[in-house]
Image 1: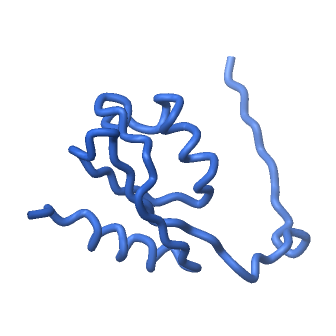
Image 2: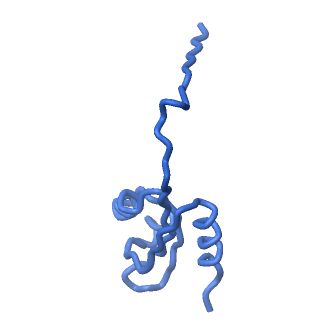
Length: 91
């Protein structure tokens, strides 16, 4: 038995977002031994998931849930660029 579902979206009825919100953030653990960089559209929800051990395998393994830096940007391209810069190895 094959079930086919279809739906249509009326783009004219959808509200246009005048402003987008993205955040680039850096987490660490209590020992300050690791850094985790991330990007999200909802920082408060994402931080909660990290603290509950559901954010990523890395943050769960190293218990990285302490926020040490965040920056809000309007466009996802800017967030990706900042994330790339923040992800370089530290010396």
